[in-house]
Length: 342
Image 1: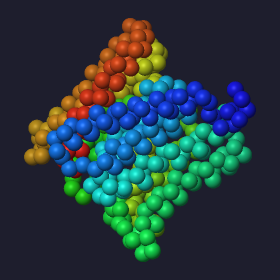
Image 2: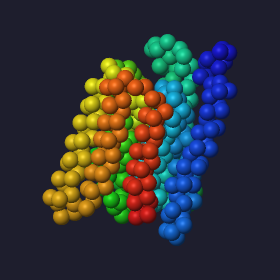
Image 3: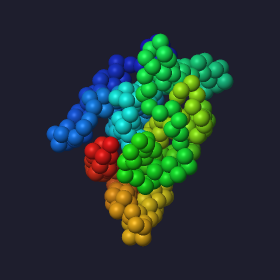
Image 4: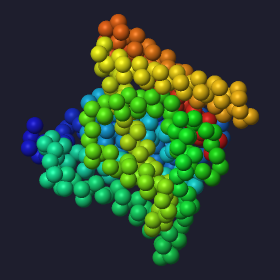
């Protein structure tokens, strides 16, 4: 590899993958948003653009740690088409652009000198680049609020993350008016748990500091007119990359890795059972039926891959097909419900 390419972590092959990813996310946005547009639902052209920018950026960022095109594509879908990013459309059409661009702004820090041995000196050089996304969020929501630029209010600056919102990552609540949904797709969440197992062996502390900082800021008050809920994009981005990492791990898993897949299998079964119990035990139980069904689908997907591992059958294409179909079903069953109700 040329020294300049080694320094930046770029190559022509990588650029071809990025271009292919852009076409993939554009096609995904057309397919995903078309039913709502055809049904005459109120929607905004910036909604699919935001999803494309966010998903494509998460794809490029995840290439720092993922080798598989499809693993990075899953990470991009999990972020760009997440309930979290979709729900920004209840405010100003440009409100979601601030969090959609975040993955791109992490790319300089992630891709610069990526082949260098980890050291204090390398981390210090990356630190200024790591501050770019934080500066971007501060400026994106602060500048429009200034009198000499409008002022324009992209979204309420007082909305912050609450402890009860964290349960939304598990239960996929139906859309609430005037509220950002801190939600994650069931299939993506189970994949993220698998990715967390892999990350626990790698334990890149510097990578973990960013989502933790975002989580803390999301619970704090507004800083320079930045809605605290916008900082939740940092842990959501981290979970999305973990989902891609988990998908790659499941597809490449061998017999020795069955215990981790079995743990994901048990978690999916528990959450599916919890959803069924809540469906029949609560007055508003109907809102838990879809999450229960999606975790049931996650259980079947993880169970199928566990069976292939137990039989020592690699069948990589079949595993990708199982994960991809499950995520597509989850995306359309849950995502369409969200986008048509906002």
